[in-house]
Length: 162
Length: 175
Image 1 (cartoon, helix red, strand yellow):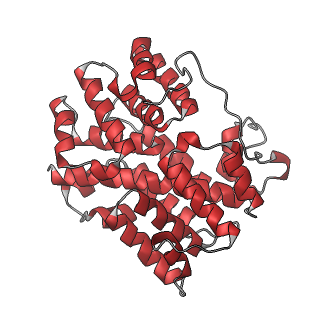
Image 2 (cartoon, rainbow over the protein chains, first blue to last red):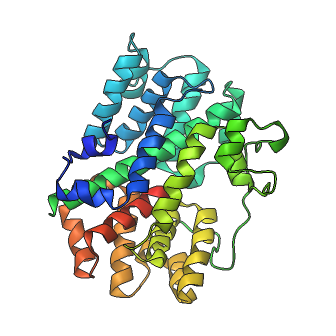
């Protein structure tokens, strides 16, 4: 099984940084486990895998991380055959469907300024028809991709400064 | 930097905007993710909210523990410093308060958290903590701005690569 962070950071088995990560075996294991739980859940709670990949792409785009964006774009293309979600994330196209608009607005808000989120922002998601499960999944997803991008930045830094 | 409620005088209250899971109707999977047993039903509201997605919670808890409590490497107080720095820059007063308290319990140096409360990323700290704070603030604000040169100030303060990896994980968890 390939490890998503090793793949994204370009770490080969036996390389110093690959071995360094193994000194934190629990982190490696549960980081990959989080990725699986968030992007390939057994029960999606009503937030589809395509929507999850699209939300991941949005976070990576906002953080200006081209490799991470490409990673989520590839996932999205595999799941969203018509490409309609991808257009709303990157092309500025609007879907008039309130549910997806509400999801994207929430991704943007929490990624750009988590401290400014308010109760009404959660209420908006519930009003748009998301279940409590979907709201928590979306929140975990936004947190995860923000986390992932920063871990990746640190790994790239160590790789470049080796 | 934006002002923030004082987080150095004890833990701030956190009230969820999403209804927490009712343990009486929880599924087996949710109870497992929460590690609830008949003798241990004391679960905080934060975990009960996250339990709406038990698959993600079951991974997040051990991920968090590995990052904040893993043996060797960066001292725990410095991981808490990274968590507070990220939370301060992010505007999360609740996380800042919880982890400022832990930092101060570990170090018995309340002045450090008072300075970060007051001055944020510009707080005047000793050189080692200043290097940690600078990296944490930059990584939180804009991960795309981090480059190989950012490792040098950390290494100059004696941080080994495992320490830097630990700090990166701790900051990223809160950023």
